[in-house]
Length: 484
Ligand code: URP
Ligand code: ZN
Ligand code: ZN
Ligand code: ZN
Image 1: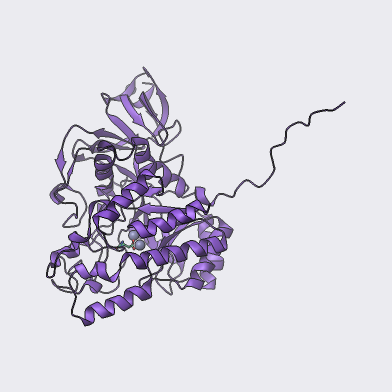
Image 2: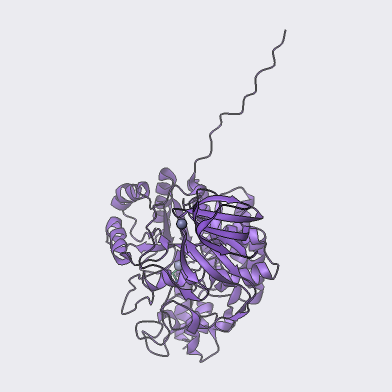
């Protein structure tokens, strides 16, 4: 046979265009696109179904140590499995530095945690919580050099946040060494002040989580982060943007010509403050994440931002804590005060089907936009393109054959993470991957998880596209006209 695998009659969609083609795969790589390709050892007729590049999830949390007696439900086995079943073939979880810990040690710890378990390819972002001189001047530059080219910083959470000066110092290192900084933008002191007042008034239910972190605290921190990026002259990515006032800040900056990139997540399209429940609804801890889900007008604003390309990427921010679990959402009892509840919701598996169904199939965004924000742009953002995020010749044969014929209702019982709930329970979707391939190997086949054990490989990231230096002014020179 000429190919290891041929997908016939694929309705291909990339970030740029759509076309009908057969896809020929050899040694895990797309080696031909064309009509009437020669035979493959394995042949699959896509019968005109959509085929898109495998999803790249640029923001998910797995097996992170949490303070106190709290644990994440997903590790490097269950998280990647869940990703694959929802069409995601590359994930970028975080290696978290504890304060006082060396960054290098943190990264090595995560490699150990990952072991050989992952069924999808993975890279690491770092989370920088201790921006001391040793870390900034030595460890960080060395790690960037070695393929860890992006890292997240926090403007809130007492045990993780950096001061303004530390943020500025950190941005300067990113600028000098060509890394991309992801910013969690919420104002810590505003949240602390509001939380104190709510608790003093006896307001502890999940709904007060949203009142303790209103849009204002996100808007302020977003503006501040933008200002620091402008000061230092470095691109940044504002992660998990939740609504109008933060979007306005980002659009203002983008219109000024600043390289401010933005990410949003399914929870800001599909969940709202109503999901944080009423006065005594503690099951609503299931939807506690930060920033919190907002109201329907803000959801509409996020959709508009996707349509207008304000957002470059759409990530799950998968942060898995089981509900009925003394190490999960109920680590502080079954009626925990909102400020004690572990922040985050699961979403690795549902990210692509939700957006394909409610974005593409409902006509809100084009299929090219879908591919851009869920795959191509993510790969570019983190230096994995064109190996990932593309259906071009020479790219890894990571793709999804979509089933858009079957209507499904999202049920946690059908998902593959280790979390005991999904916040999207009961939502219907008209799209789900029929097959997910990673480097030509089937991971998910018509409802069955079939990935070979430990198929996933660690990926070193190249320079993030936003950090690529501008080509400096060698102005284009024409041959001077010769005058007599
Ligand atoms: O609530 C959230 N989003 N938890 C995950 C950690 C983070 O800040 O992204
Ligand atoms: Zn053969
Ligand atoms: Zn965050
Ligand atoms: Zn996150």
